[in-house]
Amino acid sequence: MSRIIVVTSGKGGVGKTTVTSNLGAALAKLNRKVALVDADFGLRNLDLLLGLEERVVYTAIDVLAGECRLAQALVKDKRLNGLFLLPAAQNRNKESVSPEDMKKITNALAKGYDYIIIDSPAGIELGFRNAICSAQEALIITTPEIAAVRDADRVIGLLEAEGIHKIYLIVNRVKPKMVEDNKMMSVDDVLELLAIPLMGVIPDDERVIIATNKGEPLVMGDEDYIPTQAFMNIAKRLEGEKVPFIDLLSEQDNIISRLRRMFGG
Amino acid sequence: MVVDPKLSLDWSSDTPVSPLVERYSQIRLKQEGDSWFLVLPNQSELEGKSSWSELWQELKHYLQGREKSWQPRTSVSLLAQDQLLDVQQLQTLAEILEEAELCLETVVTTRRQTAVAAATGGYCVEQNKLSQLSLTPGLDTTTTLAEPLYFNQTVRSGIELRHEGSIIIFGDLNPGGLAIAVGDIFVWGRLRGLAHAGAKGNRKARIMALQMEFTQLRIADLVARSPKFPPKTDQSEVAFIAGSGICLAKAVDFAKTHKFSEQYGIWIDR
Ligand SMILES: Nc1ncnc2c1ncn2[C@@H]1O[C@H](COP(=O)(O)OP(=O)(O)O)[C@@H](O)[C@H]1O
Ligand SMILES: [Mg+2]
Image (cartoon, rainbow over all chains, first blue to last red; front, side, top):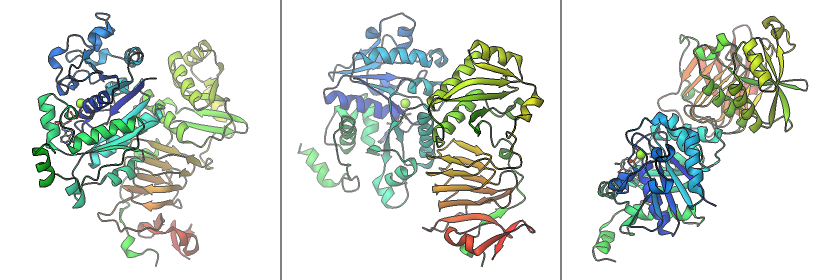
């Protein structure tokens, strides 16, 4: 049985694409066969984050138009066994895709993959509807900011109305020091408001941005990094493993952990 | 003391009555004896205010959150008023009802086109003149309150609950969420969004929450915004109209300490 999971948020720029790419890589590392679907038509960038941009030949639109087979459009990641990307068309009018189209694609993918992870666009319009229409589960990404949390709440309401009840929360870009100083909402504050199960907490970390720019999901690199562990933990929790949450405050980058890394410890 | 001064609110009575009052109830499910009716707003009520897709969205939330007091497969008559509905729209509506274990059986309409669409879709049709429709016994509720609406989940941002009676929410009313009741509002959780009780002008209406952290409260035509630094209290509180506008008091004592003065239209000390 394959699982179809949409990664969504309402607000833009909170880390949907970052989570999708890293989670895909993390699940592939756990020996799962994963298809990442870019549903952000018109603004594709999942291929960029994965460093697969130059290998994209066909897109989902070409598949729907019958111009190629689904297998031809899927880009295989050469670094990690089991990781595949179905790119979105960048130049096409996003109105040219309907929820029915998306269902066709995900149903076809469901036959060959353990996980189908759909990267949703921001907003709650057609693009969002396309992204959620075939999903059985949803990962809500939010940052600990009031506007992002409010949008997440709205999106959860819409998902519930669509009959999607397996909805999990990922809080991204947490700055433990700021939370400690009462300058940022804590994960508990966010949880209290959204009232859905927590699947992961990812610290704000410049290495995430560096990895993005390199086109190599963080998870593919050094396993010691806290954000890497956070992504791996999300994958493990999805797999049903009980993994305790990392205490971000005590795990802050101190000199010792830096030294340990320098000497390969 | 009517209100602890710490709790008095930044209020104003000169704010115009919210247009929300007029659209407090766009779509609703009613029981009359053994029969169930889904009532659509008429065209003039809906005019330019929301689209069908918004209306369907609203209906979905409403049916999901509402306490199910009906048997599975209960049949429902749609009172479509003067709305134009095509086969596709009726189909969508039937599907939404089906998810709530309700079964669209009859369509009551004043429009020929809707009647034709309903017949094509295989529903029983009653084509009614407007006047006859409003004669349907018990459907006019301008004077009496409807049964309370029990809503069994969190009212999330973007969800709007409107009801002609009192509203009881088992869960939080989140920021960006909205509850508008002609009667009272009870929140069995945190009230962080916007609540409007007595939406048709009843100054006796109250709003109670286990925890008051509202963005805005309205009772009848009065508005209270949340103070900049709301005092934190673990007590449940009730909001009501007093001489100075909307006030908060400890909910536990309220019934003992206050009574409503019909003469002044405010709650006063006993
Ligand atoms: N945990 C993080 N720490 C630091 N930067 C992050 C983190 N998560 C995301 N970012 C950055 O935020 C920006 C937006 O992320 P992206 O995944 O594209 O968001 P979305 O897909 O929701 O629009 C990117 O530049 C990304 O590198
Ligand atoms: Mg994105």
